[in-house]
Length: 212
Ligand SMILES: CC(C)(COP(=O)(O)OP(=O)(O)OC[C@H]1O[C@@H](n2cnc3c(N)ncnc32)[C@H](O)[C@@H]1OP(=O)(O)O)[C@@H](O)C(=O)NCCC(=O)NCCS
Image (cartoon, rainbow, N blue to C red; front, side):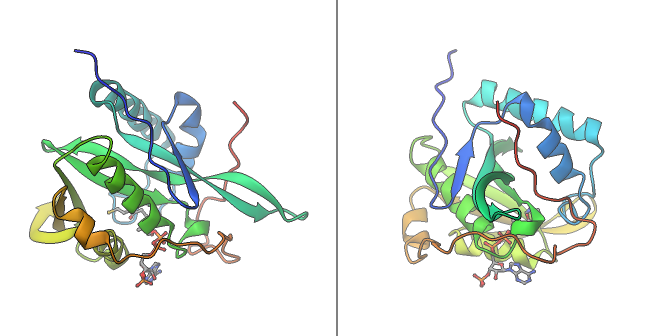
């Protein structure tokens, strides 16, 4: 069966695009960062990160959607010029039979509304062009920042569950209920800046993707 692919969603300050195998260095840098992976099973070595990317590319081929690369225009460098940087990953992947929302923002860009922006863009994509009836998410019970992202993006806490021996929370939202739940969220407009002090001294620096 031919899978119909849908163009990635549009967000106010982020560019979202389908990943390619050329994204491996940025993906490995992100998933190899212990602060990023604190609630996601810990830092992933480069070879496993590349395998994950290959699985994501395969997910796209099989389902017509998947994980997206996030890019953002930020002012950086001595000249203060605006550059497009790799800002993280977000998207929808089938997990236990349903589309599951996930998002990872590069640490120097945390706390500027980008996690929420990416989550909202993915839900808009899910319930708009992709025509999905339901999206789920799972979050570690101690990961209050991600719970806030899910709440703000219009998802609803459903129940507790254990995953990898750790306490987690299940979230979900249907296509029917989502527009009313997210309706009051004002889109973020503040220009993106790089945090002077990275949230974690071991955090990976921002990377400017090489021209393709
Ligand atoms: C979770 C994550 C995506 C959040 O991204 P972000 O861009 O910093 O999130 P936002 O700026 O949209 O913030 C969302 C809310 O969390 C709050 N928040 C952000 N950082 C915070 C911090 N360090 N401490 C307390 N609250 C924080 C924000 O203030 C905002 O709430 P508010 O609207 O009430 O002010 C980011 O921390 C990340 O990539 N973490 C690693 C990967 C991960 O855990 N992904 C989620 C898996 S379930």
